Length: 436
Image 1 (cartoon, rainbow, N blue to C red):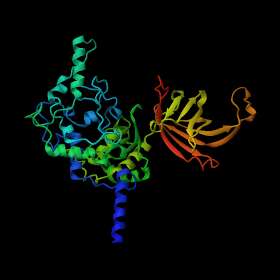
Image 2: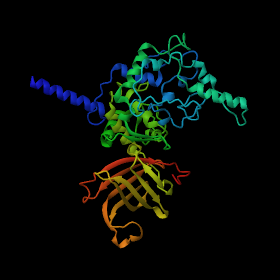
Image 3: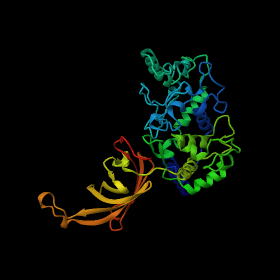
Image 4: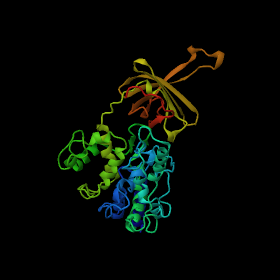
């Protein structure tokens, strides 16, 4: 009996770890329905996605695909599709749109509740297929007022959810089957497929959008995964490849990942496969979220940033999840950097540490000092100020909008201040970032 109880405790503990971590505990137990939902999210009109071709009322498949408005990361305009504009062939995720309704359906990063079948069908409130690309009015160089009005209306219509019910605006045409609806719900609600299991943060202000890969990732393990699973079809990630995959993606994997939002597209396709192609989930070995974060970190670290720190990053930076703490950074001529870090001690008292360093490409290191002994006001005497080496900060920037800070306290302060890694973004947007 005791053995059974102990076994039950171990099982429950393991399940809890799986629910909250994409680290070493990750185990893929996605059902066939989750897998079908993932393919339907990509393209429900495909055979592999459970469909039977395009509906007669729509010319362009992007106007009926889930990913087209919600994005591969399901974060809508707060993800990889933040700058995706509408054309006659595709909708967008809200950029430039007069309809401000959120396209965010990510239960984790979007802080949404799980979706339901009714939200997938959009019965009675969704648009007719022909109101998608059919409503598009392209503006010329000198549009009339009527053309501008039609264009604005088309923007909204083209981004509304299609009615996928059997009795709504598209009744009699091809709509989602009951199985597709059920499996889309199961996929979106499947915790281990949520963006939070892949990314610690998505900085949609950066250009291209920056993805902080989950902190449980291992680049060396990711390289092994790529070599064993991906290389045969995709070749060296830094080179164009004309082998088994017919040269896709064009320019090589790293060139593809340098584009806006491609990490979220990559992780969806690399984990769930691509409908109606040779890249099936069984072919790629049913990878789990741990495999995905490992291989993404390997690929991300293989991309040469090309970003060089200039005075354009000067300003106030912080992690939105740690609001009340942050960094004031000033880059002067010659690459000299002065930085202030405002934080707190273990008693909740505000602490300021300050220091200076020098730029080296997209990185700079700061020796932080903490002071005491000074007296406020007229009694101030600089000779009374004591300076103590508090620790080191290593700042790494991928763009004018995204950075990582590694804080390593000096041994004299390590008992009270632990090492810290935080991902920072700007509290204000600069007019210009200088050379990038």
